[in-house]
Amino acid sequence: MEHGITPVKNIFAILLAACVLLATSMVHADEQRIVIVASAESGIKAISAQEVRRAYLGATIVLDGVELKPLLNQTDKLAGEVFLQKVLFMSAEAYERQLLARAFRGGSSPKAYQNLAALLAALQSDNATITFMLYGTAMTTPGIRIIGNL
Amino acid sequence: MLRNFIVSSAAFCALTLLFAVFALPVAAADLLLFPSITSTHQSKEDAELAAKKFLPAVDIFYATEFSQTRFLTEFLKSSRENELERFQFGWRILPGKSLWAGRFHNPLSFWNTQMHHGDYLQTSLSRPTVANYEDESGPLPAHISGFLLESSRTAGDSEINYMAGLGIGPSFNVTLQPLDLLDPTHPGKIAASFRLGYHPEVGNPNQFGAAIGYARIPLSNALTDPVSNLLIDEVRQTVFSTFLNVEQNKFHLIGELFVFDDHVSGAANTTRYTTLSAYLQPEYKLGESGTTTIYGRVETTPRAAQDGYLSLLPEFSPHQQVAGFRFDITPKQAIKVEAGRTSRQDGLEFNSISAQWSMVLPL
Image 1 (cartoon, one colour):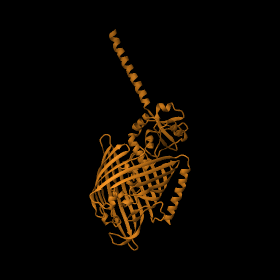
Image 2 (tube, rainbow over the protein chains, first blue to last red):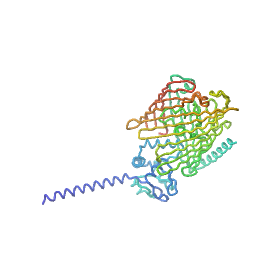
Image 3 (cartoon, one colour):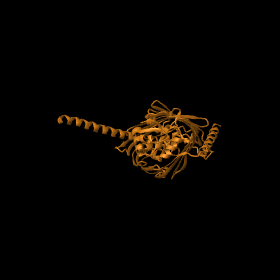
Image 4 (cartoon, each protein chain N blue to C red):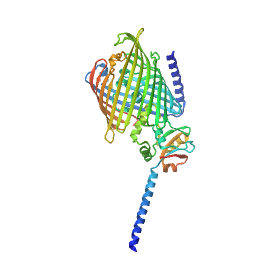
């Protein structure tokens, strides 16, 4: 009988380990998930990853009758790195140089915020503004609404 | 009549917008400094080249905006000159559409609007001769004072943009002399240009397009056309151009082709000259970090000596080849070294080697 129980135990152990690993990776993925947020009062309903990328690279994007004003969230280093890698597909240096060249040509650049309170105040004061942040931060921050999952 | 109308209208718009921008409580602002030090050695030189052997310079750029209004200015200070390069006020009339009034970069040349005095922004140390500044024997008006309309529109994955400028262009006195905003006696006449650009993918730097420009360039003193030997007092210049800018991984290619249609005229005569000019600059980033870029540039204006207008510019270089490298010491600081071979319109031919340090502040 004991010979029969051991394989079952092993299968349970493997399944349990797999579940733990899956749950861990899901938690980790959620930790690194980037979302786009706007003021809770904003009329912007939803935004795609492509529209986000274009807005942050300087293109004019009009959604639901509103011309988007992207804000750079520099309050969270991890959120910034994930955003650059997974949404803009470029290094921080390359993006900064692109913004520099754009400003020099007379174009507008996303305003950068190092302070979360100031960033949230900017979101609240203008319903056309959007920014990115980690999913966990967005879920615990009052007054904002998730308009895009990236 | 038209000149007075454009100047007074631009001045009125600029003053109105200036008042609007500074009357508003809070404005987002960019202040950028582009310092550079350039050292050049030539195998042969004249007084003008000798003055550029060691050239420290700083380009000061300031832009601010609030709501729908914008202000932008750029001032260059170097050991050779102090010049207010740009001074413009803008109004965002619609999403993706802005109207500027003031002195701005002529959109006729792609290079002119992309890099201009921000040495740090361009990979190469030097500019193509055809895109040179007015006071360095550049053949095109690099600045116009008047109105500039900018627009961009996305269509699916692509973007179409245009820039249309209308205003007062340069006069001619040894070199082109752009309008100095503080000198209302400048004799410049009308200049206009229109550029259409196409980005196959929005947000991607790849772009190609075409432009057309027209300028009436009065000569400060009547001169003899070196080609026809007739007395002349005005050049009516029409220029067609096409450009491409391709960036693919580590490779970058930038090039422009210009067709000059110059009507050089005096009291009783007009001579027409048609001349082609082109440059091509390939660049390649070395290694994984991409901090070192090698580049080369070939420029040619094959019939420059037979063009009565270009012959008025003795320091214009119909043929030039350069090769060099750029090393980004830090993300906002670069060293460039460039070797070149230049043949000038006045017959001076020389080899040169230059080194430049440039950066952008704030870090």
